[in-house]
Length: 458
Image 1: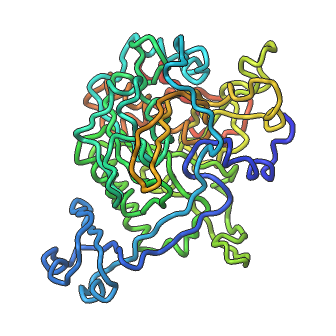
Image 2 (image 1 turned 90 degrees about the horizontal axis):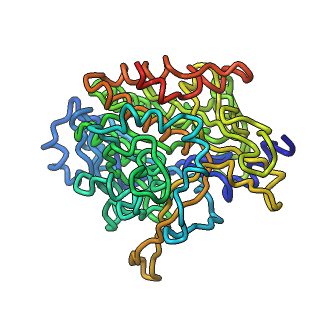
C-alpha cells in the first residue's frame, strides 16, 4: 500500500477518519470553577454549606462534581482536583451525507464489516434481545429511521451544561454512527444492519456543539450506565498522548475507581484504542508541542480511557480494495489499519474500523467503500444557537471509534444468550472466541479478531 505514512495521516485525519479521539496532540485545560471532590471523609452537607453547587453526585464512588470557587473547595479540607476538558480533533469535517430517501435498497452490500463478522449467522441465535447498552458520545439521533426502534429516550441523558437535551445528535453525527453500528434495524428493509438490533440503546451525551468534553461528565456517564443496569458502555472517545505526570494521582484514582466500580457491577466498559498509529506498550517518553505553546516538551504518555483498569481496548482493522472493481483485496478485512494504536497488553481485541489507501483519495476508485458504512444524523443550528433539526442519512467513516461499537454489539449478543453472565464472563467469551490472525503482528490484536458468531455459538 503506497503513501500510508504517519505524516500524511496527520494531514488528512480531520477529513477522513471517524473518532472523537484523533490526531497528534491533546490540549488539557483545567477548569477554574468546576472541581472533583473526594467525599470519603467529607460529608455532603459540608459541601453545600460551603456554598458549592453539586453538578454530579457520584456517591457510588465517593465523588462529587461541584461548581464554585477554589477557595470554597479548599475550605472543605478534602482531596480535590479541577475538572479538565480535552481539545480533540473532531471527525470527518468534509462529509457528504446521503439522506434516507436516497437509499432505495438495503445497504448491507456496503457493510463488509458485518459480512466479515458473519452477523446474519449470529442473528439466527440472538439479535441482542433483553440487553441494554449506553453510548457515551456526541448524541444519538432517536429519530433516525434505522434507530427509532432501539433508543430509549426516557433513560437517555445530557451530561453537559447545555440545554439541548438528549436523544439527538446535538454534539454531531458521530454518536449516531456509533449507535448504528451497534443496533441499526435489520427488519425494516431499508438502510443498514447493526450487530445487535435487538438491544436497547441509551444516549449519554458528553459533547456539546463545538465544545470540549469534560472529564467529570464522562465519569458521571459511566456511573449512570451502572445505575440503569447497562450491560455495556460504548466509549468511542479518548485522548492521546496524555502526560502521566500531569494526569496526577487524583485523576488516576478517580478514573480507576469508576471503571472498577462499573466492571464489578456488571457494566462492561469498551473503549476505542485511538487513531495515532502509536505503540501504547512502548511509547515511553515522547516529545512534542503538546500544549501548542511553541515549545517542545517530553512526557511519559498514556492513552485514556482505554488504558484504565478493567476497560477493554479495541484496535481497528479494515480492507483495501473492497468493491473497487478489481478482483480480490490488497488488504483483507482483518488487516490492521494504518492509523490504529496497538501494543502488546494494551489491546484486548481487534474489530472492523475501516481503512484507507491515502493515494486513492481524489481518484475515481471507490476508496470510501473501505470505511464503515452506517447511520448518521447531521444537526442544523440557527445563528442564535437554536436547534433546527437534523438530516438523517448514511455515510462512510473510519477509526477505532467504529471498531469499538462492533465489540459492544457483540457483547450485547453474548449477554442476551447468557443472561447470568457478569462483565468479566462476557469479556472472556469475546476474547476466547476471537480469531487468531497469523499474518500480522499480535500487538495489533490482543486476543484476536472479533468473531460474534462464534461467541454466541457456545
